[in-house]
Image (cartoon, rainbow, N blue to C red):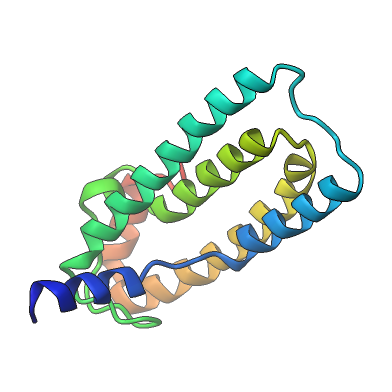
Length: 154
């Protein structure tokens, strides 16, 4: 596989959590219709927003780079990834997406995205639980040991 092919393959495996995208869309539309500022200080909101956005993108990128060399296969991964950010969180991509979501909320300076966030996170948690059951079936004791040693999120 050439370097370019590996890069395309790697980025095609970035999961875009639909619940995060839906929350961003709903919260932004509601904000346009009825603005509700998160912070009075726009400069502070933007500074914090860029910081969280950057952190989220770094975490997502690190996770993608870590799984890029593995044999991940959609619904049935061939290997259990436990290195890189996966040594600290079993779900670093979701953690990264949540940091990105919070960063966008601050950049837009809208409280509506925070109002929607519990629904987003509840939906993500349901997906994570389903993925965990699948990983336990696939990797059995290895996954149970990993789950015991590494937190689900942070």
